[in-house]
Length: 172
Image: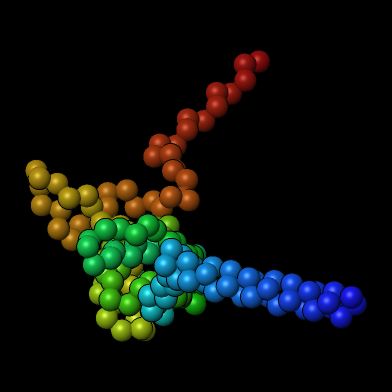
């Protein structure tokens, strides 16, 4: 009997292994049919934006550089913003190659900048020269090239235009 028992146990082990291999191959076949297929991410471009003052060509640190990638269908894919470093550079590696980039640059004491750029290759260098604020566009008068009427920057306090009257002398 021991030989018969050993034969049955080997037969049971072989049957169990056969069932496990069959189940594993069925599961992998189902994963191929119903699972998600891997889709490689799009190739991204290395974009460097250099922010300079138009008056003297010096870098503008801490300027807000806002990237709006626009896909081939014309949909805005959201916004990513970075501050420029002390050399005036802002670098981003997340914009897909072949898309359009809408770029905005905002800095205290300068007029806002905006522009669209095509990204056909995997590297793009953009230089932005910021100018001082200009007068608001008006339908009633020609403001082309005029400086802003209020020359103060955001961080400067307004100075009074009149001098205060001297205090009266005390009565005796």
